[in-house]
Image 1 (cartoon, rainbow, N blue to C red):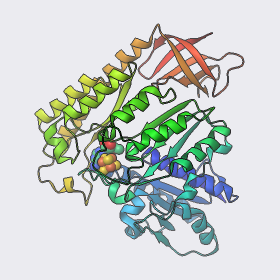
Image 2 (cartoon, helix red, strand yellow):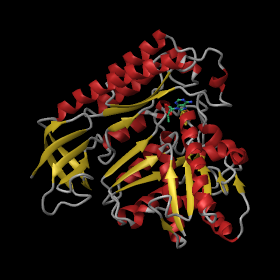
Image 3 (cartoon, rainbow, N blue to C red):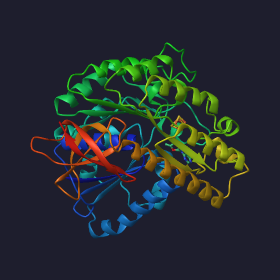
Image 4 (spheres, rainbow, N blue to C red):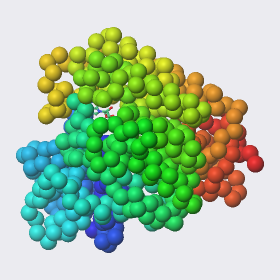
Length: 445
Ligand code: 5AD
Ligand code: SF4
């Protein structure tokens, strides 16, 4: 059968969709480019903000028309929204055939095959994930990709007061180092040069779900990085998203000393106000956060930072917001995912009476976006006149003479292609000029 998968939300969802694609292709199915040509439509959904849920519900709703024309069409919803609402989704979307939560994604191929024999609704949203070994399957492995995502933990135990993830993705589990190394080795043998390690709380890897921050000399995540750094042929290791409290001295030292670990670090701040951080149930103060940043800056001179911030958390005052804005400027983040707080049913923050008005959220969001743009442009300009080592990705979409690659900080670089250069090559590029999004330059020997 021809299967179309649409993914909403975070990189973990992208990875889950890729694993599903891999499992389905291994069973003899193929992937469809468009919804129209598909026999099966799967929507891998997100619940982290209301807008993400509404988008997916709207999209699946529209597909009712297609199903009327093609009654054999199978439609399924998987991922966080499936887990969050389960069978209830069928009330609004009665044309959906299956709903599969976050712990049962590996059952997608069986369910599709059952549905092609007999049409009964399948709703699988039990809380505890079954063994997810199958989820190590990669689609990209057959596809000559130089980049791959590798999930190393699943779930989250932190229960930040605004966040639905611990409820829809369940308790935190870590895979075994040996299994991850095996997976990455296979990827590298198939041409992968760069990996992105994924987890809701990736630096808590291997700590058994303990929410107390570890001692300075403890970090199973650092042990994993050491092993991955040893894999011959692998060039770059990135990771997302780590909770700040797990940045022990041991981890900082590993990031600083392991050459393959990239030096752009995503470190979610959420707020720069201690009062709000406390209400968010984040286990650090602004000062402790800065301490980690400063340790990283000291041990990795060329380090850059990205972050996540929520504006308009309940009871956030102008002073709280100013503290966030000041901290963002002080750290000098070169990238930030800026979110407007969205109340999630069942989370403690949604019950706080004093919710911030929408226009205040919009306004604060806009201010941070503008600050970020200015910082990004200024940062890009610092690259002009330098020579950067680039991992080549391939031709740009618009112009096949122009190729793109990334610096270790994750900056996109455009350059003119030369004979012998292929995806995965490591080259030096002299940066000549920049835009808001990219750097441009010429290859040097
Ligand atoms: N509203 C807005 N943003 C949220 N995030 C998580 N929950 C919410 C919410 N209810 C943001 C956080 C997190 C990122 C993945 O999404 O910043 O780091
Ligand atoms: Fe959500 Fe907090 Fe867990 Fe991140 S650490 S997934 S924000 S509960």
